[in-house]
Length: 422
Image 1 (cartoon, rainbow, N blue to C red):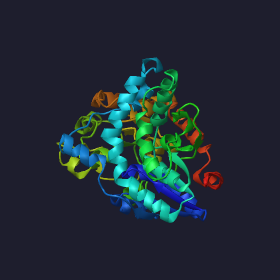
Image 2 (image 1 turned 135 degrees about the horizontal axis):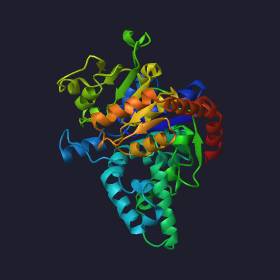
Image 3 (image 1 turned 180 degrees about the horizontal axis):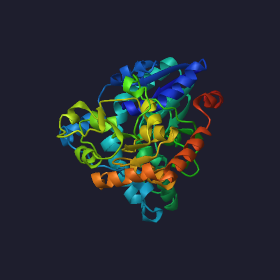
Image 4 (image 1 turned 90 degrees about the horizontal axis):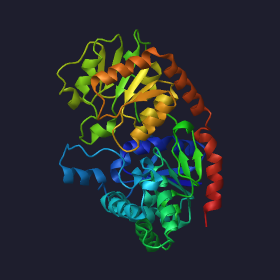
């Protein structure tokens, strides 16, 4: 079987997909990852075969020109994908139509236009049996439909895209199907260019694969989902010598993610404020801090170890707690290793997933716009002193491990690919 993966040119998105690509490869299938050229190194470092397609233009480049280098972008879910945070009765068809128009023009076209034509060209040449794409890369569904391949979305968090689409279709039906459908019009144009027609599968895939532990999943009604156990993976890594030994004091990880720093944006919390607030605690704080951010710090407390990077799958099993921005990779890795979590979310679905984590009792959450050093200190002390957080983290790990791993999903993907080829 030939399997083609594709994703938005964001390293963290690809890393979430890589373990499933490995599972298919080790089962004997021919697996390739087609992405914009800038992703080639990340793909090959993961031991997978890269196919550079399209140009390297992306949303971050455009945003940087519009807002100025280093500017902080507005946090949160963009419309209409914030429909998940709104009461259904507050949604209107006119609002959703306009929100889709804005989102297509402001983001989806910039994400997919540099990729779509070349991806279809390669798919027609290679003829994959199955295409796996993440929710921002509609070009993956376009390419699959162009060659008659089965295809699936691989979620990178909460399915806010499927939920928004569910509400749009509900409202559209309630109005008798009258009026335009901006997303269908845009994707339908691509489909017809390559010999097809618009189908809802171009929006949400024939089915979706979810890496989140079941208690944290956010799904759209009526859609077909398959859970697969999360495999911790952060790319090439080296375990430092200081991490060989068990900590003498409770070890706490502090990581605000790589994506925010990589794109020249500020950390979502005041790092100096946090370091000062926990400076007198009897802990070993291990904080991942980029060198340029470290240079801006006035003080580093004696109980803190600052490193540019450390593999989370090596660090978190040694930790009594973790403070993080609620990125999917970090949150799910911490859940995998039964670590109580303090989430200080900033962007996209981070607040939503943080709230679900807290509802499970496996952690606490404070939005980064409200998270002072004192609040983080007080919350951390609770995580370290109240056994209920560790007990809930144990339960969340058990529910994570109960989900079939990526290898177990291969047989079903084989069946779907065989049924999906026209």
